[in-house]
Image: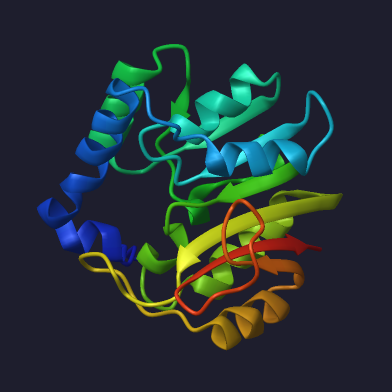
Length: 198
């Protein structure tokens, strides 16, 4: 069966600004750990965490620095190269979400899908990805998901909150919390941060 390309892949060079932007922020010493701080607060010390769509590695590297066992996975070769250059000690698998094998990787206390991962998936794969996330979680594991609800980047989709919630429930997950930021502000119309449970 042929694989459907992701929206990220279809956007091609139009998305290269993402990596450059965060490289500049890291070089300037800017705070790029907001998502990681929240992820860290959701788990005990030494938790197993999988960062799906880890990009240039900033969240995964911060979680490793905080003492967690982290599996990072990023299918974009350019972002993996950037991750290696920026965080040399961070191993990154080349898998997309649907290629992650729970039998091989084991169970995780937390799955992290931030940085708009959900709005760049291949068309029609959202529920399958959420099912795979569910299968990767320990029985009491959770997922941290964050994305723009409106298409704001090249190639991304609009993903209304009510549609996402329906996909979450169809995948055997449930919404535990919804916030408007990684600092736990009230929900807003343009961005959503979700904590999901099995």
